[in-house]
View 1 (cartoon, rainbow, N blue to C red):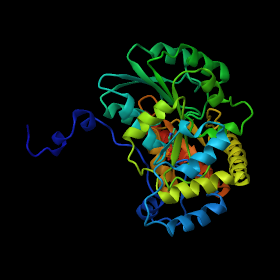
View 2: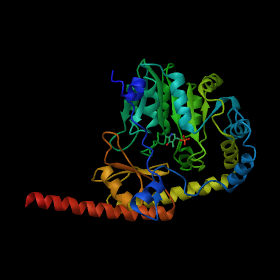
View 3: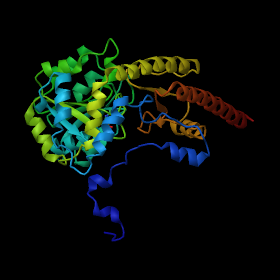
View 4: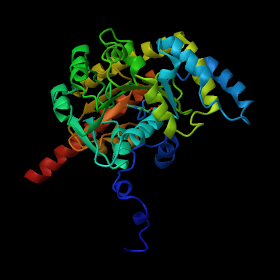
Length: 386
Ligand SMILES: *Cc1c(COP(=O)(O)O)cnc(C)c1O
Protein backbone atom coordinates (compact mmCIF):
# COMPACT_ATOMS: atom_id res chain seq x y z
CA UNK A 1 0.00 0.00 0.00
CA UNK A 2 1.31 3.39 -1.00
CA UNK A 3 1.36 5.37 2.26
CA UNK A 4 0.97 8.64 0.35
CA UNK A 5 -2.33 7.75 -1.27
CA UNK A 6 -4.90 9.16 1.11
CA UNK A 7 -7.66 7.66 -1.05
CA UNK A 8 -6.74 4.32 0.45
CA UNK A 9 -7.99 5.52 3.83
CA UNK A 10 -11.54 5.48 2.43
CA UNK A 11 -13.75 2.45 1.90
CA UNK A 12 -13.55 0.93 -1.58
CA UNK A 13 -17.17 1.89 -2.33
CA UNK A 14 -16.38 5.53 -1.60
CA UNK A 15 -13.14 5.56 -3.62
CA UNK A 16 -15.00 4.31 -6.66
CA UNK A 17 -17.82 6.87 -6.47
CA UNK A 18 -18.14 9.67 -9.00
CA UNK A 19 -18.73 13.04 -7.36
CA UNK A 20 -22.13 14.67 -7.75
CA UNK A 21 -22.37 17.01 -10.74
CA UNK A 22 -23.70 20.08 -8.90
CA UNK A 23 -23.02 22.59 -11.68
CA UNK A 24 -21.51 26.07 -11.61
CA UNK A 25 -22.66 29.06 -9.59
CA UNK A 26 -23.64 32.34 -11.26
CA UNK A 27 -20.67 34.05 -9.59
CA UNK A 28 -18.20 31.52 -10.93
CA UNK A 29 -19.47 31.98 -14.49
CA UNK A 30 -19.65 35.78 -14.14
CA UNK A 31 -16.00 35.90 -13.01
CA UNK A 32 -14.65 33.35 -15.43
CA UNK A 33 -16.11 35.00 -18.54
CA UNK A 34 -16.34 38.60 -17.33
CA UNK A 35 -20.10 38.75 -17.87
CA UNK A 36 -22.81 40.83 -16.23
CA UNK A 37 -25.90 38.91 -17.08
CA UNK A 38 -26.27 35.26 -16.20
CA UNK A 39 -29.20 32.91 -16.83
CA UNK A 40 -28.85 30.16 -14.21
CA UNK A 41 -30.93 27.36 -15.67
CA UNK A 42 -29.02 24.30 -14.49
CA UNK A 43 -30.60 23.43 -11.13
CA UNK A 44 -34.39 23.58 -11.61
CA UNK A 45 -34.81 26.57 -9.31
CA UNK A 46 -37.99 28.64 -9.21
CA UNK A 47 -37.55 32.10 -10.80
CA UNK A 48 -40.50 33.55 -8.84
CA UNK A 49 -38.88 32.89 -5.48
CA UNK A 50 -40.82 31.89 -2.37
CA UNK A 51 -44.14 33.26 -1.10
CA UNK A 52 -43.81 36.71 0.55
CA UNK A 53 -44.79 35.32 3.97
CA UNK A 54 -41.67 33.14 3.94
CA UNK A 55 -39.29 36.06 4.64
CA UNK A 56 -41.45 37.18 7.58
CA UNK A 57 -41.53 33.67 9.06
CA UNK A 58 -37.77 33.33 8.59
CA UNK A 59 -37.06 36.63 10.36
CA UNK A 60 -39.10 35.50 13.34
CA UNK A 61 -37.34 32.12 13.41
CA UNK A 62 -33.98 33.90 13.26
CA UNK A 63 -34.77 35.66 16.53
CA UNK A 64 -34.94 32.19 18.14
CA UNK A 65 -31.81 30.82 16.54
CA UNK A 66 -30.07 30.18 19.88
CA UNK A 67 -32.49 27.32 20.43
CA UNK A 68 -32.26 23.90 18.79
CA UNK A 69 -34.95 23.25 16.21
CA UNK A 70 -37.92 21.00 16.99
CA UNK A 71 -36.53 17.54 16.22
CA UNK A 72 -40.03 16.29 15.36
CA UNK A 73 -40.93 19.22 13.03
CA UNK A 74 -44.30 19.18 14.81
CA UNK A 75 -45.88 22.34 13.42
CA UNK A 76 -44.93 21.47 9.84
CA UNK A 77 -45.92 17.83 10.41
CA UNK A 78 -49.40 18.91 11.51
CA UNK A 79 -49.78 21.31 8.59
CA UNK A 80 -48.71 18.69 6.05
CA UNK A 81 -50.80 15.94 7.63
CA UNK A 82 -53.87 18.16 7.26
CA UNK A 83 -53.04 19.13 3.69
CA UNK A 84 -52.19 15.61 2.51
CA UNK A 85 -54.80 13.74 4.52
CA UNK A 86 -52.22 11.36 5.98
CA UNK A 87 -51.55 10.70 9.69
CA UNK A 88 -48.67 12.77 11.07
CA UNK A 89 -46.74 9.64 12.06
CA UNK A 90 -46.57 8.70 8.37
CA UNK A 91 -44.25 11.65 7.65
CA UNK A 92 -40.44 11.90 7.78
CA UNK A 93 -38.36 15.03 7.29
CA UNK A 94 -34.96 15.67 5.78
CA UNK A 95 -32.37 18.35 5.16
CA UNK A 96 -33.67 18.39 1.61
CA UNK A 97 -35.14 15.20 0.20
CA UNK A 98 -31.60 14.24 -0.83
CA UNK A 99 -30.90 13.78 2.89
CA UNK A 100 -33.76 11.28 2.98
CA UNK A 101 -32.32 9.45 -0.06
CA UNK A 102 -29.07 9.08 1.87
CA UNK A 103 -30.79 7.92 5.06
CA UNK A 104 -33.02 5.47 3.18
CA UNK A 105 -30.00 3.94 1.45
CA UNK A 106 -28.22 3.46 4.77
CA UNK A 107 -31.29 2.06 6.55
CA UNK A 108 -32.45 -0.42 3.91
CA UNK A 109 -29.36 -1.45 1.95
CA UNK A 110 -26.65 -3.91 2.75
CA UNK A 111 -23.58 -5.00 0.81
CA UNK A 112 -24.54 -6.76 -2.45
CA UNK A 113 -28.22 -5.84 -2.24
CA UNK A 114 -29.71 -4.58 -5.48
CA UNK A 115 -31.44 -1.34 -6.34
CA UNK A 116 -33.44 -0.83 -9.50
CA UNK A 117 -33.59 2.68 -10.93
CA UNK A 118 -33.78 4.28 -14.37
CA UNK A 119 -31.29 5.91 -16.76
CA UNK A 120 -30.87 8.80 -17.39
CA UNK A 121 -31.15 9.34 -13.69
CA UNK A 122 -31.00 11.73 -10.80
CA UNK A 123 -27.37 11.17 -9.73
CA UNK A 124 -28.09 10.56 -6.07
CA UNK A 125 -30.30 7.57 -6.91
CA UNK A 126 -26.99 5.92 -7.87
CA UNK A 127 -24.49 7.56 -5.52
CA UNK A 128 -26.08 6.84 -2.13
CA UNK A 129 -26.93 3.18 -2.82
CA UNK A 130 -23.47 2.56 -4.32
CA UNK A 131 -21.88 4.04 -1.19
CA UNK A 132 -23.49 1.29 0.89
CA UNK A 133 -21.96 -1.42 -1.32
CA UNK A 134 -25.23 -2.17 -3.08
CA UNK A 135 -25.47 -2.75 -6.84
CA UNK A 136 -27.57 -0.35 -8.86
CA UNK A 137 -29.32 -1.52 -12.00
CA UNK A 138 -30.22 1.42 -14.25
CA UNK A 139 -33.01 0.59 -16.67
CA UNK A 140 -32.81 2.82 -19.76
CA UNK A 141 -35.81 4.90 -20.76
CA UNK A 142 -37.34 3.95 -24.11
CA UNK A 143 -36.00 5.60 -27.27
CA UNK A 144 -38.96 7.99 -27.22
CA UNK A 145 -38.16 9.06 -23.65
CA UNK A 146 -40.72 7.09 -21.64
CA UNK A 147 -40.38 4.78 -18.63
CA UNK A 148 -39.77 1.23 -19.88
CA UNK A 149 -42.10 -0.42 -17.39
CA UNK A 150 -41.65 -3.96 -18.76
CA UNK A 151 -37.87 -3.65 -18.47
CA UNK A 152 -38.15 -2.18 -14.97
CA UNK A 153 -40.28 -5.13 -13.90
CA UNK A 154 -37.84 -7.56 -15.53
CA UNK A 155 -34.95 -5.97 -13.61
CA UNK A 156 -36.48 -6.79 -10.21
CA UNK A 157 -34.87 -9.90 -8.72
CA UNK A 158 -35.03 -11.69 -5.36
CA UNK A 159 -32.12 -9.45 -4.25
CA UNK A 160 -33.84 -6.15 -5.11
CA UNK A 161 -34.38 -4.15 -1.94
CA UNK A 162 -35.31 -0.78 -3.42
CA UNK A 163 -37.14 0.33 -6.54
CA UNK A 164 -36.17 3.98 -6.63
CA UNK A 165 -36.81 6.55 -9.33
CA UNK A 166 -38.25 10.00 -9.81
CA UNK A 167 -41.65 10.69 -11.34
CA UNK A 168 -41.78 13.07 -13.16
CA UNK A 169 -38.38 11.83 -14.24
CA UNK A 170 -35.44 14.12 -13.62
CA UNK A 171 -33.98 14.76 -16.20
CA UNK A 172 -36.45 13.57 -18.87
CA UNK A 173 -39.62 15.16 -17.50
CA UNK A 174 -41.86 12.22 -18.46
CA UNK A 175 -44.19 10.50 -16.00
CA UNK A 176 -45.81 7.13 -15.52
CA UNK A 177 -49.49 6.92 -16.37
CA UNK A 178 -51.91 5.27 -13.93
CA UNK A 179 -51.84 1.90 -15.74
CA UNK A 180 -48.05 1.77 -15.78
CA UNK A 181 -47.78 2.64 -12.11
CA UNK A 182 -50.39 -0.01 -11.33
CA UNK A 183 -48.42 -2.62 -13.30
CA UNK A 184 -45.33 -1.84 -11.23
CA UNK A 185 -47.28 -1.94 -7.99
CA UNK A 186 -48.92 -5.25 -8.90
CA UNK A 187 -45.59 -7.07 -9.28
CA UNK A 188 -43.63 -5.33 -6.53
CA UNK A 189 -42.41 -8.13 -4.23
CA UNK A 190 -42.77 -7.83 -0.44
CA UNK A 191 -38.96 -7.65 -0.02
CA UNK A 192 -38.71 -4.50 -2.17
CA UNK A 193 -39.40 -1.00 -0.85
CA UNK A 194 -40.74 1.49 -3.38
CA UNK A 195 -38.95 4.86 -3.13
CA UNK A 196 -41.05 7.13 -5.31
CA UNK A 197 -39.25 10.46 -5.67
CA UNK A 198 -41.91 13.02 -6.51
CA UNK A 199 -39.70 16.14 -6.26
CA UNK A 200 -41.63 17.79 -9.10
CA UNK A 201 -45.07 16.71 -7.85
CA UNK A 202 -46.60 20.20 -7.73
CA UNK A 203 -45.67 20.94 -11.35
CA UNK A 204 -47.01 17.59 -12.57
CA UNK A 205 -50.18 17.78 -10.50
CA UNK A 206 -50.97 21.06 -12.29
CA UNK A 207 -51.40 19.04 -15.54
CA UNK A 208 -54.72 17.28 -16.12
CA UNK A 209 -53.30 13.90 -17.08
CA UNK A 210 -50.93 13.35 -14.13
CA UNK A 211 -52.28 10.44 -12.08
CA UNK A 212 -52.84 10.54 -8.31
CA UNK A 213 -49.64 8.57 -7.69
CA UNK A 214 -49.86 8.83 -3.90
CA UNK A 215 -53.44 7.54 -3.97
CA UNK A 216 -52.57 4.60 -6.24
CA UNK A 217 -49.51 3.69 -4.19
CA UNK A 218 -51.43 3.92 -0.90
CA UNK A 219 -54.21 1.72 -2.33
CA UNK A 220 -51.68 -0.98 -3.28
CA UNK A 221 -50.78 -1.71 0.37
CA UNK A 222 -47.15 -2.12 -0.72
CA UNK A 223 -44.38 -0.66 1.48
CA UNK A 224 -43.31 2.74 0.18
CA UNK A 225 -41.61 6.04 0.85
CA UNK A 226 -42.86 8.84 -1.39
CA UNK A 227 -40.50 11.82 -1.37
CA UNK A 228 -41.37 15.46 -1.91
CA UNK A 229 -39.44 18.67 -1.41
CA UNK A 230 -39.79 22.36 -0.68
CA UNK A 231 -36.83 23.08 -3.00
CA UNK A 232 -38.60 23.11 -6.32
CA UNK A 233 -42.13 24.57 -6.68
CA UNK A 234 -42.02 26.10 -3.18
CA UNK A 235 -38.68 27.73 -3.99
CA UNK A 236 -36.80 27.00 -0.73
CA UNK A 237 -33.79 25.22 -2.30
CA UNK A 238 -31.31 27.27 -0.26
CA UNK A 239 -32.90 26.28 3.06
CA UNK A 240 -32.78 22.50 2.55
CA UNK A 241 -36.05 20.88 3.54
CA UNK A 242 -37.91 17.91 2.11
CA UNK A 243 -40.22 15.22 3.40
CA UNK A 244 -41.37 11.68 2.85
CA UNK A 245 -44.75 10.02 3.18
CA UNK A 246 -44.43 6.38 4.31
CA UNK A 247 -46.87 3.51 4.17
CA UNK A 248 -46.45 2.62 7.83
CA UNK A 249 -45.11 4.38 10.96
CA UNK A 250 -42.62 1.51 11.36
CA UNK A 251 -40.80 2.80 8.28
CA UNK A 252 -40.79 6.33 9.71
CA UNK A 253 -39.33 4.98 12.93
CA UNK A 254 -36.55 3.11 11.07
CA UNK A 255 -35.69 6.19 9.01
CA UNK A 256 -35.65 8.37 12.12
CA UNK A 257 -33.01 6.12 13.70
CA UNK A 258 -30.36 7.12 11.16
CA UNK A 259 -31.14 10.79 10.65
CA UNK A 260 -29.27 13.34 12.69
CA UNK A 261 -31.83 14.44 15.31
CA UNK A 262 -31.83 18.09 14.26
CA UNK A 263 -31.50 17.57 10.50
CA UNK A 264 -34.08 20.24 9.64
CA UNK A 265 -33.14 23.65 10.96
CA UNK A 266 -35.47 26.06 12.71
CA UNK A 267 -35.56 28.63 9.90
CA UNK A 268 -36.38 26.00 7.27
CA UNK A 269 -39.22 24.56 9.33
CA UNK A 270 -40.80 28.00 9.78
CA UNK A 271 -40.33 28.86 6.10
CA UNK A 272 -41.93 25.61 4.97
CA UNK A 273 -45.02 26.21 7.12
CA UNK A 274 -45.37 29.70 5.61
CA UNK A 275 -44.77 28.47 2.05
CA UNK A 276 -47.40 25.76 2.42
CA UNK A 277 -50.01 28.30 3.50
CA UNK A 278 -49.78 30.43 0.33
CA UNK A 279 -51.57 28.47 -2.35
CA UNK A 280 -52.03 31.50 -4.62
CA UNK A 281 -48.26 31.95 -4.86
CA UNK A 282 -47.80 28.28 -5.68
CA UNK A 283 -50.43 28.52 -8.41
CA UNK A 284 -48.68 31.56 -9.89
CA UNK A 285 -45.44 29.53 -10.07
CA UNK A 286 -47.19 26.58 -11.70
CA UNK A 287 -48.87 28.76 -14.31
CA UNK A 288 -45.68 30.65 -15.11
CA UNK A 289 -43.75 27.42 -15.56
CA UNK A 290 -46.40 25.69 -17.66
CA UNK A 291 -46.64 28.69 -20.00
CA UNK A 292 -42.91 29.24 -20.37
CA UNK A 293 -42.21 25.53 -20.78
CA UNK A 294 -44.58 25.37 -23.72
CA UNK A 295 -43.06 28.50 -25.25
CA UNK A 296 -39.51 27.15 -24.84
CA UNK A 297 -40.41 23.77 -26.34
CA UNK A 298 -41.90 25.41 -29.44
CA UNK A 299 -38.98 27.84 -29.82
CA UNK A 300 -36.60 24.88 -29.52
CA UNK A 301 -38.51 23.14 -32.29
CA UNK A 302 -37.94 26.20 -34.48
CA UNK A 303 -34.20 25.68 -33.86
CA UNK A 304 -34.60 22.08 -34.99
CA UNK A 305 -34.27 20.78 -31.42
CA UNK A 306 -36.84 18.26 -30.20
CA UNK A 307 -37.56 17.54 -26.58
CA UNK A 308 -39.71 15.01 -24.81
CA UNK A 309 -42.91 16.56 -23.38
CA UNK A 310 -42.18 17.46 -19.75
CA UNK A 311 -44.48 17.78 -16.74
CA UNK A 312 -41.71 19.32 -14.64
CA UNK A 313 -39.92 22.69 -14.62
CA UNK A 314 -37.25 21.63 -17.12
CA UNK A 315 -36.76 20.28 -20.63
CA UNK A 316 -34.33 17.58 -21.71
CA UNK A 317 -33.08 17.95 -25.24
CA UNK A 318 -30.52 16.60 -27.65
CA UNK A 319 -28.46 18.47 -30.20
CA UNK A 320 -26.22 17.22 -32.99
CA UNK A 321 -23.15 18.02 -30.84
CA UNK A 322 -21.53 16.78 -27.68
CA UNK A 323 -23.36 18.28 -24.69
CA UNK A 324 -20.14 19.50 -23.06
CA UNK A 325 -19.19 21.39 -26.25
CA UNK A 326 -22.61 23.05 -26.38
CA UNK A 327 -22.37 23.74 -22.66
CA UNK A 328 -19.03 25.55 -22.95
CA UNK A 329 -20.39 27.68 -25.77
CA UNK A 330 -23.48 28.58 -23.68
CA UNK A 331 -21.35 29.36 -20.60
CA UNK A 332 -19.37 31.90 -22.61
CA UNK A 333 -22.70 33.62 -23.25
CA UNK A 334 -23.70 33.53 -19.56
CA UNK A 335 -26.13 30.62 -19.77
CA UNK A 336 -25.80 27.81 -17.22
CA UNK A 337 -27.44 24.49 -18.15
CA UNK A 338 -26.81 20.91 -17.10
CA UNK A 339 -24.98 18.91 -19.78
CA UNK A 340 -25.67 15.19 -19.32
CA UNK A 341 -22.72 12.90 -18.62
CA UNK A 342 -24.29 9.44 -18.37
CA UNK A 343 -23.18 7.07 -21.16
CA UNK A 344 -25.75 7.08 -23.96
CA UNK A 345 -26.97 10.60 -23.10
CA UNK A 346 -23.87 12.72 -23.61
CA UNK A 347 -25.50 14.75 -26.37
CA UNK A 348 -28.37 15.81 -24.07
CA UNK A 349 -28.70 18.92 -21.94
CA UNK A 350 -31.29 19.84 -19.35
CA UNK A 351 -32.59 23.39 -19.19
CA UNK A 352 -34.70 24.67 -16.29
CA UNK A 353 -37.71 26.86 -16.99
CA UNK A 354 -36.63 30.25 -15.66
CA UNK A 355 -37.92 33.79 -15.89
CA UNK A 356 -39.18 34.93 -19.28
CA UNK A 357 -36.00 37.02 -19.70
CA UNK A 358 -33.62 34.22 -18.73
CA UNK A 359 -35.41 31.82 -21.05
CA UNK A 360 -35.01 34.33 -23.87
CA UNK A 361 -31.31 34.66 -23.11
CA UNK A 362 -31.03 30.86 -23.26
CA UNK A 363 -32.92 30.56 -26.55
CA UNK A 364 -30.84 33.27 -28.21
CA UNK A 365 -27.59 31.80 -26.90
CA UNK A 366 -28.48 28.31 -28.04
CA UNK A 367 -29.37 29.57 -31.54
CA UNK A 368 -25.99 31.26 -31.58
CA UNK A 369 -24.10 28.19 -30.34
CA UNK A 370 -25.78 25.84 -32.79
CA UNK A 371 -25.13 28.19 -35.71
CA UNK A 372 -21.46 28.54 -34.86
CA UNK A 373 -21.00 24.82 -34.20
CA UNK A 374 -22.66 24.07 -37.56
CA UNK A 375 -20.29 26.50 -39.25
CA UNK A 376 -17.27 24.86 -37.62
CA UNK A 377 -18.31 21.36 -38.59
CA UNK A 378 -18.88 22.61 -42.14
CA UNK A 379 -15.35 24.07 -42.10
CA UNK A 380 -14.03 20.71 -40.88
CA UNK A 381 -15.79 18.89 -43.69
CA UNK A 382 -14.42 21.29 -46.27
CA UNK A 383 -10.91 20.97 -44.83
CA UNK A 384 -11.21 17.20 -44.95
CA UNK A 385 -12.50 17.09 -48.53
CA UNK A 386 -9.90 19.67 -49.69
C1 LIG B 1 -34.02 18.33 -6.83
C2 LIG B 1 -34.30 16.89 -6.59
C3 LIG B 1 -34.21 16.33 -5.32
C4 LIG B 1 -33.55 17.01 -4.18
O1 LIG B 1 -34.28 17.95 -3.59
P1 LIG B 1 -33.78 18.59 -2.22
O2 LIG B 1 -35.04 18.53 -1.42
O3 LIG B 1 -33.36 19.94 -2.58
O4 LIG B 1 -32.71 17.78 -1.62
C5 LIG B 1 -34.55 15.01 -5.14
N1 LIG B 1 -34.94 14.26 -6.18
C6 LIG B 1 -35.00 14.74 -7.42
C7 LIG B 1 -35.41 13.86 -8.52
C8 LIG B 1 -34.66 16.07 -7.66
O5 LIG B 1 -34.66 16.54 -8.91
